[in-house]
Structures are given as C-alpha cells and as structure tokens.
Length: 226
Image 1 (tube, helix red, strand yellow):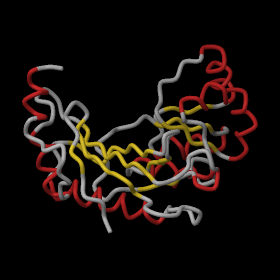
Image 2 (cartoon, rainbow, N blue to C red):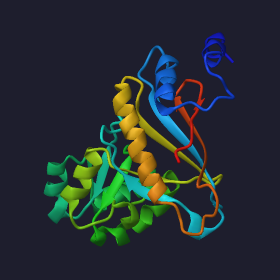
Image 3 (cartoon, one colour):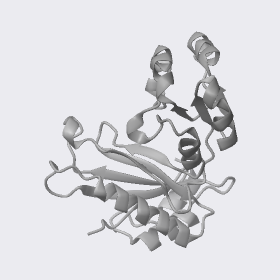
C-alpha cells in the first residue's frame, strides 16, 4: 500500500458510520490528484442471491447524471438507422456489422439497444455480448420499437443495475468534481429507487451496509437510511 493511501485512510475512522454529507466531503478530499475520479456507492444487501425471487435488477436516472460518457450501439434494421443516428447512437449495427462482430469478437461500445425485429439476428452474438453485460434486454429498456426514446434516455444518463453474486450493488453516482449537493441528490435518488426494488420475500434489513468511495481512494462507511 502506498504512503499516500496510508495517509488518506488515516483521515477516516473505520469504526464510525458517517452521514452522507460527511462521507461526500471525505471522498472528495481523498480522491485521486491526477484525474477526476468516479464516486462509487457500494451497498451490501440482505438478500439471498441464490434465490431468483430475491434478485435485484432495475433501471435508474440520476438528476445530475454519473459523469460517465458511454458509447451506444444501435442494433437496428435499415428502416430505423436514420432515427438511431439522429438520436445520437455512436454505432449502427445492421446484419453485416453483426456478422463482423461474430467473426472478430471486437466490441468498441458500452451499451447496446435493439429493436425487437433484430433480436433473432443478435442471438448469433449473444455469447459475445452476454458475458459483458451488454446484451439488449427489454427488462432494462434496451429493447423496444421507439429507438429515439431508448437512445435519448441513455444519453441523459439512464443505466441498469443489479446485484452481484455476493448480494452487493456497485454503482457510480457521479464524479469527485461534482458539487457536494449534486452528489447527495444523486445518491438519495438512487437509494430511493433501490429501496423500492426490495423483493417481498426479503425478511429483516434490506440494506446491511453502505460504503462511499472514489475510484482510487479509501472507502467511507455510511449510516444506513431508515
């Protein structure tokens, strides 16, 4: 561990539960010096990730965005290509592009959207897209007939979230450079959405622990909202 990290960790009481405003101030103070780090919220949930009825999956839009710019690929037929381009898609993926993707396995986009008619064609690259978590899925709003709406929402910062295999949620909620008030609004909004996603089968505390951190900084343990 670097000397600087030791110095940063020394500023945080590992036994204390910090208020959100206190935690944001510490994360901004201890963020990386050379670049604008992402601010990440890590939530340990009281779910059993082995039970399908307790899995968490949803979509959200934060009031001030996450600060991350993502490349969007639109898997659309010729009839929808103009609309996809107008909406701001970075890549247009037709049948020929899908064949090339199958051959090369090369992905240079972060999110994929598709119209329903393209899903049978996308099936041939499901093994490439699936493991990376970017297979279009109607449950998270990335499959639909309204191409402009899908891409427009993603451009505004819409994202999907889900728990991992150890019952944790990891979510970018902004940048260290954001105003503290904007980070607080983003986090409050995400937690409100997350709490609404609590499955009926979960007994006891839904949120067991929360931590706020920057990409290269130490973590700060948060008070759990009531």
